[in-house]
Length: 398
Image (cartoon, rainbow, N blue to C red; front, side, top):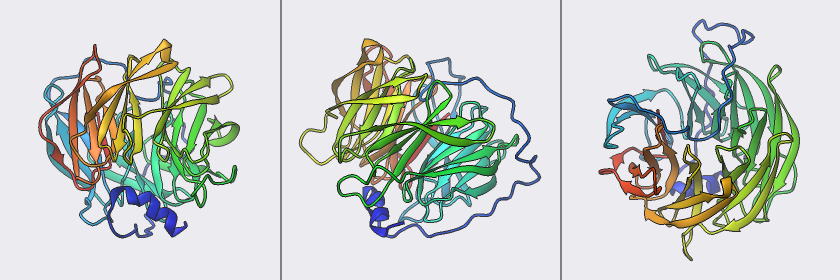
């Protein structure tokens, strides 16, 4: 990977040094072979689930960090949160996982997956019942920064920022990672203004379950692939190009499955995208404001409420959360305003499963802030004091 590109990737945290290249060996511990089928699960909508009753008592919260950064963490942070108050308490760390900057959980809730955002990219599986690291597998690219589990639970999808590639890994019955079945590198169109090459930033399954979308900041393009669920391979079926220099970073679908919302990191905008489930074709709409005003700002991530009525955007630089009303069955975003995030550089935001809380991982201030979400108005209200977490770049509430 071009070292200048890695610096640009990591400038957002303003910390020194680069991640060392470390190869992590797989240690499945006697798991079944990778060709053992996993019972299918129903396809689910990408994004926060619809509001539902939350069991009383503390709920788990997993925290991503950079272990190779100055002042970084020692692995995947373990915490718990109170669904009623939003208060977070620490519970230790899963060590032996290098630079776990993004996290995702299997649909059955038994296994946690983390990227290892290093020159020699890898992804790691952790069994949640006893927090045992089940092993790691190379992505075939560099600096993976995002991963997601296909809704039917058979494949792990990951995006390599440094090499501009996406990878597919088979998931074993145990939750451990099997063989890598695909690696696709974005070779065209040419890089956008100021970019040295492709930079895949997200790889996510569309609500229809049959298409995988990869968002690439370097080529200003969102690629749509069809996933072969037997072979675990990807076939490109469409691509949507944002305006030059937009730097698309993150895509979030409306629960209706016909629209998605795109956060553009480099030109500080968002866009409503129309999506056609049958073909997988995405059409990117006109750029819209993020509420950041005239200052320097890098939008990070969008989330949509389970009922599809509101969307929230993390603004790095402006250090705010933008609130949008979602109108016309998902076809329109209307900016309602912003609230201070209560930290510095919100890298990642997530809604609790019941939709009642929003968590923001603030990279530069090294903390997680929590907000109560008003179900009727979508308004955000701070929930207590920030929770200290070294170089906080991901917060995953379950």
